[in-house]
Amino acid sequence: GESVGLHLPTLSVQEGDNSIINCAYSNSASDYFIWYKQESGKGPQFIIDIRSNMDKRQGQRVTVLLNKTVKHLSLQIAATQPGDSAVYFCAENNPAAGNKLTFGGGTRVLVKP
Amino acid sequence: KAGVTQTPRYLIKTRGQQVTLSCSPISGHRSVSWYQQTPGQGLQFLFEYFSETQRNKGNFPGRFSGRQFSNSRSEMNVSTLELGDSALYLCASNIHRGAPQETQYFGPGTRLLVL
Image 1 (spheres, each protein chain N blue to C red):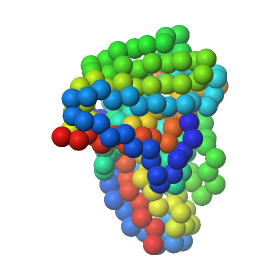
Image 2 (image 1 turned 30 degrees about the horizontal axis):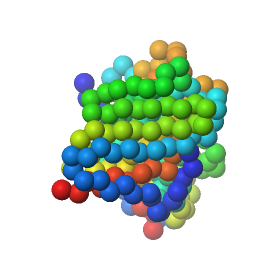
Image 3 (image 1 turned 90 degrees about the vertical axis):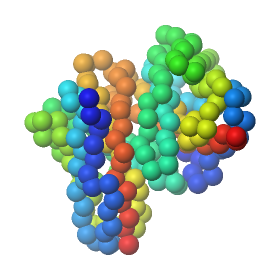
Image 4 (image 1 turned 60 degrees about the vertical axis):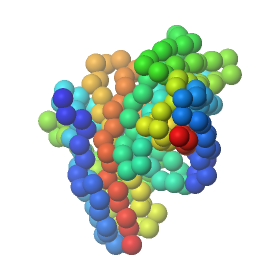
């Protein structure tokens, strides 16, 4: 993913609705992907991960979809809650790069009550 | 189990000074990575340490350095600080069982302001 700098894309969603956050990753050799949530003043918090041999993985209220053909990753949050308001980052890991994660620019999610 | 801890949480320095940041990984985690987060560049990888050795390095100048101790705790140092070094410095740890696909868990970060 590419950093988008100061102007993060923002997704405004009504409380209770579903949210979909998209991410385009950069390296076709990447085989591991992670979604992180970062709240103001905190470090990134792990949400869910997926390996390249899968195309879908579900967690509690979250689902990650992986489309390797178009190098696209998405995070779906069901029944979005006010506590879901944060910046969400996707990260990719290229096995040739060891433990180095490459992060996307992030998407800000604002939940409206 | 306690999470990744970083000290100090906030720091103000002036140009030309040097700074040392500390990271204690999750107990049992042997690999520590450092990232810099700025509004302009986002999250960028600095370096990774495992078994007291730097295994991987990002594209940062030599002013940025680090080390890891035998208890897996890590420090990073920035010498001759520049205004552009103002950022949130994040430390992440993972177990390192040997597989490349391991989740990294982040600490709260150290907010550095260079005046």
